[in-house]
Length: 309
Image (cartoon, rainbow, N blue to C red; front, side, top):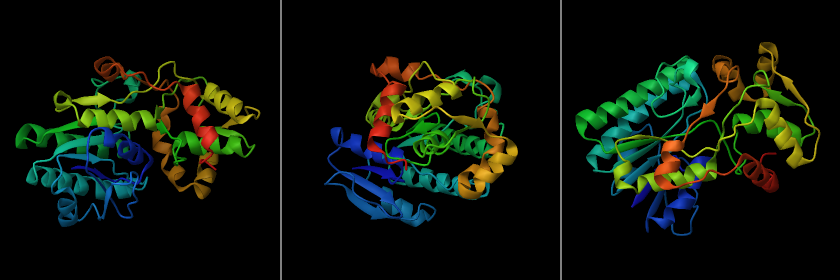
């Protein structure tokens, strides 16, 4: 049995799509789980309830943590440590291997241009401090309690599933409505985005590779990163519209937050957009001979499916 906790998000769905290659039994766990594959087992559970989470993990050989709490520092500060402690305890109790899906918020803001698995941890934001705290919990559980785990780390991502990613909300959706794209910072800086189908395939592969455990892995992400302006042009070209954009001021960001709640939390994350944000996944690509989806191809698929509206 291989189990996905937080199976309803765009990345979790992609892991579920990839798992039948490796597992005959797949369990999807969330508050309102839905089958991805015909033979999936679904289980409702509140992941903050230690007993419910333990029951969801019972019988699992591999557990994929794909949980995403609402994008709020207060929620993260309260929920992430509780969930992570419950997750560690349940995996240890049931002798399950853990694949933890992570982001880069804990990285030093002065080392984002070419970040890899060795990038220094020095969180520049409150949400980054939470992410650093839970990574520390996982590493201590590995070193001190014998938890068999790995961390699968993604850059900001974009998805054909039409999720509420920053790229979707600020660029793809406005351009699709013939409005101006909203850049979070000056348009000359490069910014990597991980394509969720690549992330799903890679996460499933890591979970079923014995010698991948005990390490941190950057999930495959295309190189030749577009700048902010180039992202607008790339998306506009696929949509067949003019590449119009504006750079959001703090006041404008506040106004956008009235209609897009996650954007209210963005001011402390603006450092990711006023410098090059280049994500290096060479370790994974070399180990598994994996070529990430080129950005143009990924955006073409997103636009073709049209789920971002």
